[in-house]
Image (cartoon, rainbow, N blue to C red; front, side, top):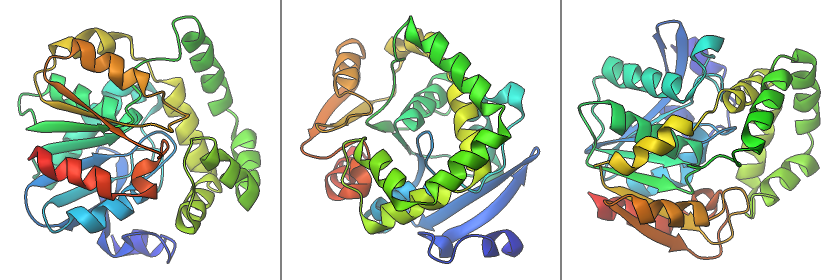
Length: 285
């Protein structure tokens, strides 16, 4: 709807390709760009479709790119609390693809988005030709720490006051820059501006915390060895958010997987320099 698009910041990457889709109570912000085989791009926790802006420039002449904001993040409305889980996000993305009449040939996921992509492949009959994981967060923080972390995130997500305080704090450059640097990435001016905008939105802060609170990888981890879709595991050597050893370990027990290491870049490497990631994605089809 045009009224929804008008609410986007004027500087927002790929704004001209934005539209909103209402499905089963969720108002999705989706960016669709390019031509060719459909490629679904799933961002990670705390991000939005803006994360694909640089890659979209390289890929839009080869693929039809479908870049949604996950519910509760960016400019998409949230899921009901009882649906906030890995299964819930995957199911809603499948409904979005059905509504758009798209059957993606490739799934590209960053961090938690890579986990959602593998879940979609494991639980749907129309499996994609390949999945490309960019710094995929496939393993929990640890069997002892993960339950505590999830409970803390759940408690924090209930506080609207915390969301407003965090949003006010996020309007300043220094905390946003510190947050991005801690991922191992070197933020550009555009990265700073986009993440500052997201963190200044209380609904985005709340949606991110709720996603973290509902994140349970137990069953998914057990099913991953049965994955039959080729899985391309791309890691960045300077990633300080998701250690490269996660993908290295995963490649050892998933038969149809291939491991790539991109030197020098951090967790947001595809935003820093899209070229090595674009080459890998194009070579998979």
